[in-house]
Image (cartoon, rainbow, N blue to C red; front, side, top):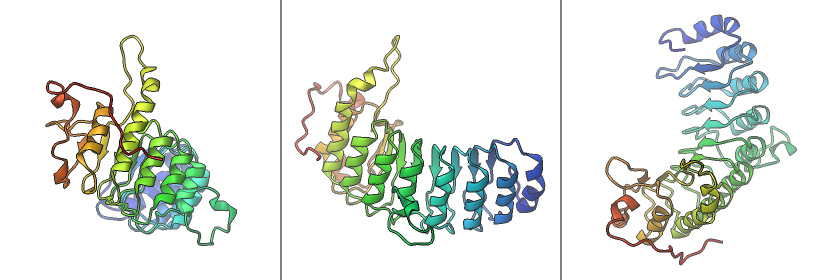
Length: 309
């Protein structure tokens, strides 16, 4: 549904007539949507699976509570740029929308903290302020999660990411760009627990060091035989990292990043195929993907001088 004028009124009138709706896109450049329209959708569209509310700056926790009560079949939810939600309301949503596989919380700086990712959030009063509530809830309630965007949610720390890694083992894509508090501990946990991870965004995570890179490389070697089990009749469903953004991670050295690049052949630095993004890391200019280096190098077993623990 795309409407430039009177979106709220239109949705209020249409909601009772679209009870079988499964996908609804309400992305806005000029925020119009209000809580009463989302409540109408939640009350009538019980089969909704895919909902985009990005940039809905007027929405409050009322919308999330109504979605939790009415739209329990949601598998994909985009709340990027919604800055008025609390982590308590988001945690409550995950308690009922347990089928979520794709969740975009990019830029929800006021709502997303460790509280959303960790377990046992509901062992305390919902009005009680507890560190780790939202990340706890995602880790505990959404074990089918495959794609999570937490870009620029600056309150997230290692504790939250550890809860996420433990609770969401099927995670395929995770964007932590701008999560400035996280360290190597987060990446080590993801490497060890989320063996299906294909895309990882670490842009501007300036506490990341070589230990994180070697843990990714080691996990790739460890899981190599498991990935090759998918080879059937000449078809290879390639697992392992396909996209990695380490831009502005200035503590990284060429040897550590090259180890990751060598382990995951789907990571490319060559023109037109940039899936290993290293902008702002001037010391990493010597890192190249296999398709560039193959004529000039003999591939040998990769050494890992800094094993992760």
